[in-house]
Length: 101
Image 1 (cartoon, helix red, strand yellow):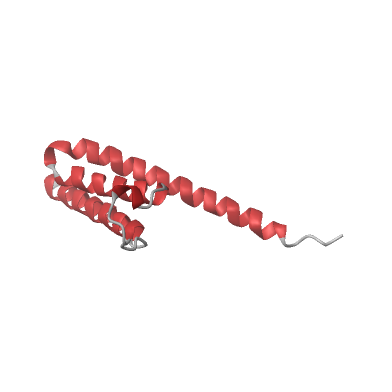
Image 2: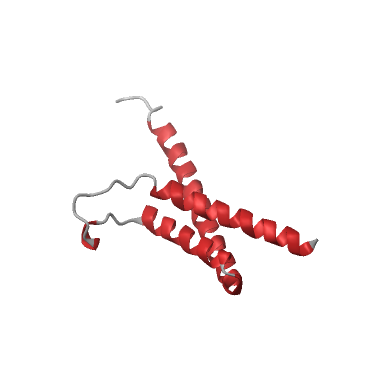
């Protein structure tokens, strides 16, 4: 019973990591230039790559621990991003409520 539950949880975590990576990569458009220097860079792509690595490591039984570590890092990054976005919304809401002098 424990093996089945852990296998299902691992499969669910793989699907979540892959879904996250696909969601992050959905904004990529094919560029005319195919060189690596022309590819866009930034945190969006780094987090997508982290999600793909986590899913890959979770799929290989001998690297399950590394997959869990990468999935935890990905979760922490997502939580921090959501927390920062929430803070920016609060700051943005108060800026328009003042009176003009």
